[in-house]
Image 1 (cartoon, rainbow, N blue to C red):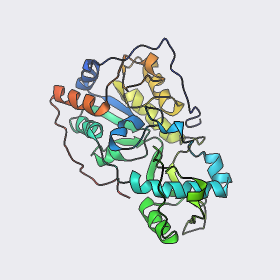
Image 2 (image 1 turned 60 degrees about the vertical axis):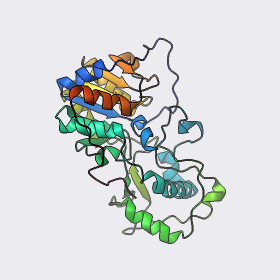
Image 3 (image 1 turned 180 degrees about the vertical axis):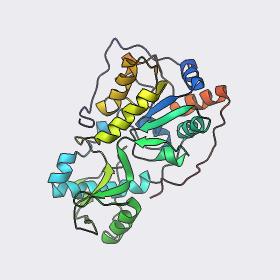
Length: 304
């Protein structure tokens, strides 16, 4: 059970076309019991780029793999230098209209839960409470030796102290919080060990090539079984970690509705794919259902 084994996907010519009709989305939500599956596309309006959308970062950036991170000290140095810089920008991202609409749907009792493939905690920052972080969260760090978790804020403080003056200009920031830096910019960046056992620290996210925890996957499968329908928001569904839940819903004859501007790997399993920007689409649906979308953020969870 590998996470994200496929980094690229070419849409088949026989995929059904997208639509701009939001009625299927409104119909599903009005029935209630909707399980949301969100991907990187819901966070692009918060300034966090997508992997595969227009201008997606896969064209210039190969994400770190678990195997490389654990086996290569130089790779870990590159990762932590880039991630430390990226965290400054990534952590300042704020929920957008799409996140706020999802939180509003939850407050009105229309959702059975939210599964997110994102690691940015913007759903929680918008006020959504029942969120399963399929791929973990960048705001936590775990020691690979002793298994102790610690706040990313604390590690960021330690790295600032260990690397005074480290402030290179990044070419861009990626959905995993990794900044684009050259090896020269990374330089002799100092990586810090676990304060308890001296082990290797890793962000509490599932890297490419790493298995999603089986209990988390089974919990998500249970959520799919309990849901009346599945609403996919901003995911290309290129990788199996999210696609499997779409397939499960379709096999159980539960309606699958997708909002994503580009074709997805799950389109053939969906009732429809709405090809509209997420923030505007979800705000429009909320208006049709009489659901008030709060313009603000109840919690400040995304700050570094």
